Length: 341
Image (cartoon, rainbow, N blue to C red):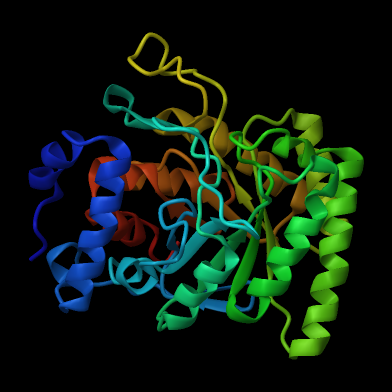
C-alpha cells in the first residue's frame, strides 16, 4: 500500500521549490535502490500501446524537466509510468538562470519556472543513461546552450542528436522553452526549415551508420497563433519528423492573475495550461490527420484532464506539474482512466 502523498506534501511545500525537487528525486532513487518503490506508487497499469514503432506499457509518461540529467530513470519508471523522458540536455554543462527560478502557485495548481536548461552536459547525461535498465521506452530531450547564438542553434542540436541517438528510444527536439533567449524563434518559418532539414539529414546518416532509425519528435509552445500551428504541422510532415509533443509552458498568465508569484517571469505550467494545450492538440490533429503521433502535455492534474488530452487528439500524455500537487498516485489514476481508449 503506497504512503499517501498528502502526508508528505506539506513538508515538501515548506521547503524552497528547488530544494524540495532535489530531495524528492533523491528519495525516489533511494527507495528504488532498496526495492521499496511500491511505498510511493501502485504497480504499473498494464495497457499496452504501439506508437512510433515502440511498445508503451501504458499511455502515461513523465515529461522532460523533472530529471534533467537522467539520474533517476529507473526509479521514476518504477512509479508506474509507461515511458520516461529526461533532459533537456545541452552539449555543454550550464548553470541555468539565477535563483530563485521556480515558484509554486498552489491556489491554481500551477508552477512558474525560468530554469534555463540547467544541466550537467552531454557527457554526464549519457553516463546516467547508459546505467539505466530501460524497463519502459526512454526519450532523450535535447536543447541548445544559452551562450550559443541563435543563428548557430543547429550546431548544438546536431551535437545533441549525434550523442544521444544510439541510446534513445526517441529523441525530442526542444525549441519551445521560454527561458532560453530567442529559442522560440526556431519554431517559425526559415529557422524551422533549416533546423528540421538539418536534423532530418543527420538522423538519416546516423540511421545508416548505426542500423536503427530513432524516432524524432518536436516539442512546441502553446503560445503559437493558429496560422503558425498549421505551418509548423506542415513542416513536420515535409521533413518526416515522427511526432510532436504539445505543449511546453506558456507565457500567458490567464487563470493566475493576482496570485502570489504570478508576475514572475518564466513559463507557467499546471492546471491553467490545460485548455490552451488541448486547443493546440486539437488543431494539430486536424492538420496532421489520423495516425500522426501526438503526445499531449500541459495541465494534467487529474484523470479527467488526461482523458481530455486524448479527446483533443493526443495518443499519449505526459505529466510533470500534476505530480507536484497530486503525487505518484496520479500516474496510476491517469493510466487507468486511459486504459483501452
